[in-house]
Image 1 (cartoon, rainbow, N blue to C red):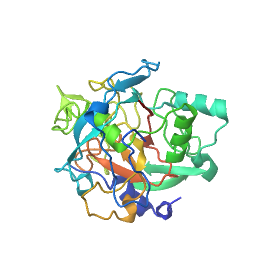
Image 2 (image 1 turned 30 degrees about the horizontal axis):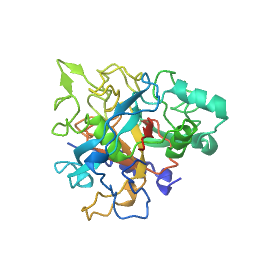
Image 3 (image 1 turned 90 degrees about the vertical axis):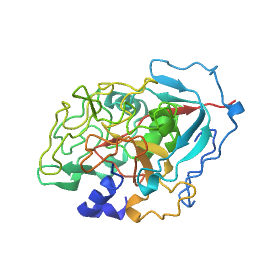
Length: 318
């Protein structure tokens, strides 16, 4: 794993570095490239209807089109905002759950990287520190058989490599960042907002996603009802029918976390790795705004963390 795993301070920087106020696009995802490049398609080539059969209870058809990717008002790594046109795709309604992942393991005898390494990354809120915890894995995300993961919660302590193995087994892949942002922002229609539900974290005094509500790191408030992960689908979906596109867990994306085209910034070591989107239960606007539509994060592809999960997409071809 990355050398930052030997340093709790460096882990802290990596995990919280993004906080604030392959599809038919042939997105380049090689880490040796300078930019995250998206080759636009012509709008006339967008597939309007999908012919192949898919499980409508589990996946949503997202018609491709034109939208503004990125955010000129966000962090430097979210700039520049520019218009792109992407192809249609299918995306999971929900995050992959512990139950889903257990079925995969039972069918394949797969062993995750956290199980191979013997540990995973956990934030210990009792002493305010990030740690490599022995025994932390997808079944016991806090480590050492402390608390077993609940079946209807998103699976965590899975690396990018683990997530890709799961996707490949089911004939899918991880979403690219452009796919994720397009779907989260309801095909770009909500890009003028902070979140897909608006600009306020609460609506009618009700939390719209799973997040630490106040006080981190000295005190933690769980006014939304959850200290750590929440059951998938507990909070309201966006208009496409996608759940947990903000909060709960960061979601692995397929591409490397690279500057967007036109951004000459060179990411420091702590921002290098595979991209993540959506924020997690750790996020709070006072120190983190990871559940904004354009917010980005990253970790090394072999890292396993207690607040990172994933969902799958299926790319569509003509």
